[in-house]
Length: 425
Image (cartoon, rainbow, N blue to C red):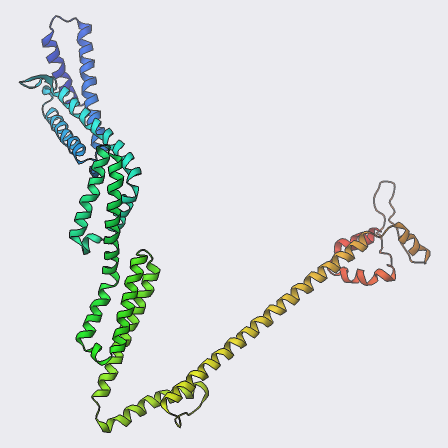
């Protein structure tokens, strides 16, 4: 027994013995045992609840009132426990002047409150997890999007409505909880959509605004308008399916493409507007040389005797023709390989069938055929044995009739089983 435990037991025993000095020796031993048991029980309860109350903050949402009462009682119980550890003689002393309850009694009373509130919270959790499952899933999703980061005020209002749902469960008003849950889900969905747009579309809108400041809308109004259309399409996709991130990513890439396209078109227009009349021809020739390099690489043609628009059309047609030719050639090779494989498969099946038929013919040859072979002076040597049953000589294969000779040759290379049957006959 450690010194602290001894001190507590001695204190308990002294107090009890002073209260009843006339008690017999057996009663004194009983008092000592009871005192020890009471103290041990208190130690164990404190240790058990100290472990159980770790990481229970998630229970607060189910009933802040019950959760607060539980923590308050636990703090009181823990404070009493610390006093007992510091001064074990307090164990059986009165806790206050206005009560006859001892320190141990008061400690156990507070633990009882903790246990009662914990049971109540766990029951509320089971019921709320079932009734408010959609709302809880939606709130978890909003937290995953980090909606609070983008719309703090609206998230706070949504959070207060969410907390009220659990209050209705605590008050056993399930109908009210379900009704308010519908309102919460509608508002939470709206916040979800706004958050997704903020994450995916807002940065692109900022980039478009920067293009406007750089006069992209002035130099390339058509391209700028196309960006606006793509951004609107992206918003519509998010409105319809805010969790279809594959479609959202596709829309984002299209917007990014149009942003880059508008920027370089505006740059080209701006460059062309800054050219003097003497520089116009050089600018056009540069464009034509780019088309020439493409036509040369494609089919070694020089199309500069045509207008630039015609050159572009002819190059486009040549590219399409080359692509169709490539596809046709690839398809032809694929078909040839497929047909060859099919033919080989059919040939293998045919050979397997022929081998099976030949094996069947060899297996079904009966004794009259052997006698007929003997009558035609075809030698057939039988196996003879001595008196001990040992083989004196090896059998030889009889010459097969003419109608099965080819079959035996075909099977001879890989059909040892058929050869063995032939030898036996």
